[in-house]
Length: 325
Image 1: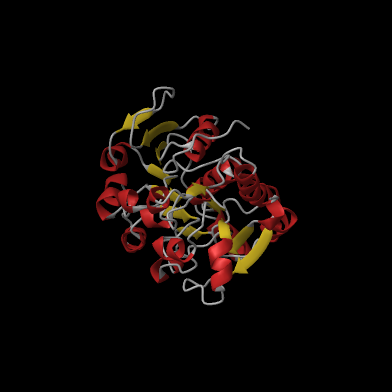
Image 2: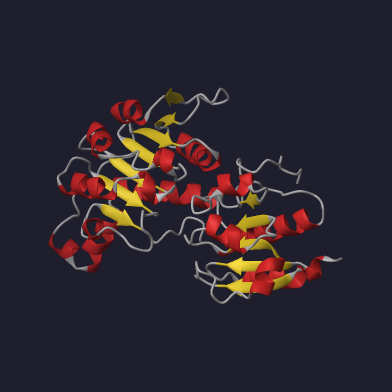
């Protein structure tokens, strides 16, 4: 039986390259944002063996697994997969894959961009020019990246890529994570409060989930000081957005740069109103090159699995070692 007879459900936000890849190898079934799967026939539900998750935050959990009794693999678009119950999937013998590595550089680039924007206030400076204010006088002096102490929350692939970029700026770098990493020379902090008390800048590159939920709260923000800056390219749920908005408004910290939010595409109204917040619409991986590579990796994971080679990029909860690439 060839791959073309295998039914694969493309679920979530439509991705043309995923659709094309599935169509060229498998028998595709498209389901949009329908957590009740009302448009899915019982016959198809019985025969679907894979889900290509096209992104978004629609839950992929026991409800879906119950409706797809022969599901073998969920291939997810993106690095973060907190919308997928990977533990329950593993309990049922369902594989989960994501798309790491291929987006690392673009996301790291954007993190540094946000930091530079926050430090040098480039958004304000552009508005200053466009509104004609330059005719009345010079733009106010800003902070500098020189002598900053940067703490990275989550020194995984993306966190390390951010650190490598910051090395070239000569700033002090530390990190906080579950374990100390012996192959780096950066200062390790065992918890977020210890790091916040020692640095003036936090860059979030950590995943979402219960263990990191609102890890950066009012107390942590207060430790950064009035020159403090917070950058988030990880998951929106890591930051208490209401506390961040208050800290920005009250001058507890100087600025923030965010590409991710707790309730996307919604953004906390007080953050929208904050002049010292740089807000981007989750574009860290949003280049043609990277999104194409992510879509291809979704398809490649499915092809590899159904060709008997094993998953290429399984998440840690999935009990399979990565296949050599």
